[in-house]
Image (cartoon, rainbow, N blue to C red):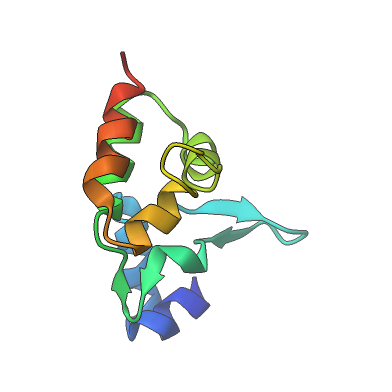
Length: 104
């Protein structure tokens, strides 16, 4: 979280609030069980455009944070690439359409 806060020019408490508010997804990793947010979720010093809406759709479809992260980074031949790559390429509508369809 300190790295995230520094990259986004925020206090650590504000960075943690982004996770609580479901603007970002974080999981615990490593030996020290550190709360981590993928660097790909940040664009400059902002949350990646379209990510919060995608996170909401995945949560609405009962995805855990770990499952949501796995889905975001799993290649999809029909996109092409991963959902997070598509968001970075401003193809968020298609990513959200796919996330929404997971519930059906």
